[in-house]
Image (cartoon, rainbow, N blue to C red; front, side):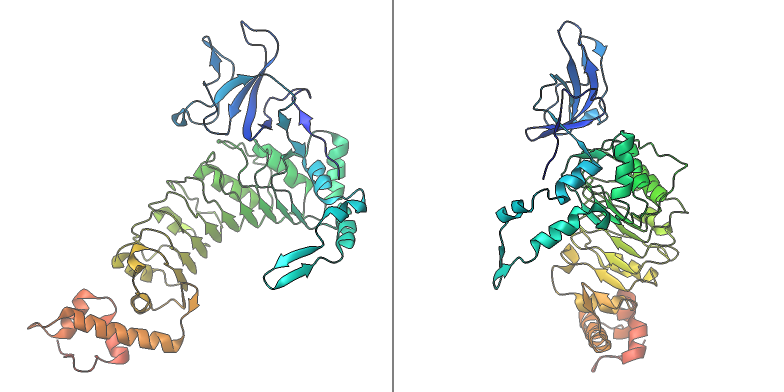
Length: 424
């Protein structure tokens, strides 16, 4: 297998991403610096703690960094030495990953794999290698961490890319060297059958410049670990790609400020962000699945008109700590599956309470709620509610109704627990 590493001596590098040792940066300027000799590269470092300034020297602004200055300086000047490794094209990466020039290279690959129950023999590696060497046979292309920066500018290579990768339906490009949204658009133009795309952990900065004349049909999009983008960027990207399933996690998202009424997203994962309010998402007409795992949410206040299509909601590993938040979920009549594992509210066994408070759900924390379990849980809930109100001159049922939800409905369904006074 062969590859070509592009180094700093290869022509103009402005706007391109590179790595040196374990650090990553983007070239924002190439040329002379007053008071010095030779050519310099003005670099915006992606790697934290590498920058020394904002792109200026001795009062002159040579370049500007795209990252906010609140995180400290990101810029510095470096020499264009050959140990700077730049990106490669999509086709170059695909050839390097999938084409085996000499099948004898396979002899270095272990022929057995350690499994839980012993050795697993790897059979037919030569046949697999031959099949994958024909890039036109590939429908799934995995090129994570391959320094891909786009499809390049060479017309012959672009034409070959369109021909060789024309059947690719699923493409993973996480942790690569793309710095502009046009890089992604060029790839989408070259791969017309693409339906699933992962561009997580690339280095595209806000604001994203989207070609409004272009529309794609990428059903599933992962764009995790991209704090350089804003919520508005994510929405615009998703609408251009007409995405149905979107993941934007691990990106320090704090606020959802605008949700277009015509956004037809169906599945949305915002896992491991910094969200404390999701009210704006309630207007999404087609949203069926919402993942809010690992956000610092403490409360929800769902109105009856919100989340008209929501079927599955993941609130695990949030900071939900009050029953009113659970009760407000009754306003989502379409809700069927709920996950609330590892929250302050569910530190103890409260499955019976959640099942009894939410009559519409059929699955809780991944486990199906059978008709028998619901009946048992609702009856147990009535017993616990009756016991909790204690002795008083007021009738038990009246006190239960004043303190707990769904009591009157459940009493009509199951009757009062034995020994309790049902009168008002």
